[in-house]
Image 1 (tube, rainbow, N blue to C red):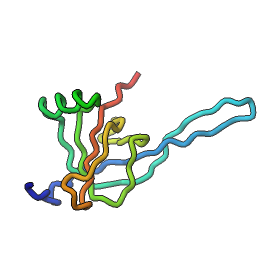
Image 2 (cartoon, helix red, strand yellow):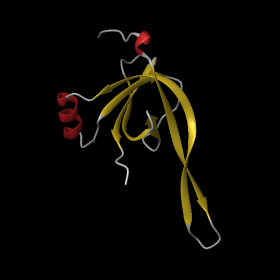
Image 3 (cartoon, rainbow, N blue to C red):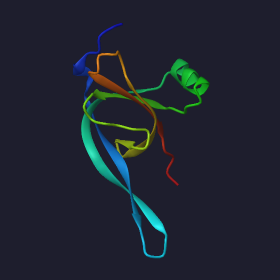
Image 4 (cartoon, rainbow, N blue to C red):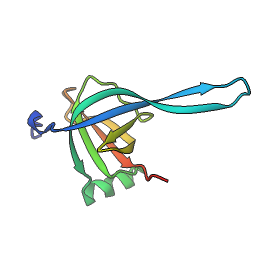
Length: 110
């Protein structure tokens, strides 16, 4: 497998996690808080990547590659260029535990 070039980590992303607050009436509210700021390689998903994701029942529009070390889960989200992306998948890109790939799907604003 081709080695990943860390010089490609040119974009800045923010990883956010959801915080849930409960009130006395039994209701709750959710807010997003910053978990980490990371340098990332960002690329739009190719047609073949989208097809593979759909076969695995995932939706994706972008791939974000960051250095490993930040714990990212599917419950988090990515902010890039002011837009939010829900996380469909998180994986080690080459089995070395050096880089993490996050597959994300842009959240349409309403």
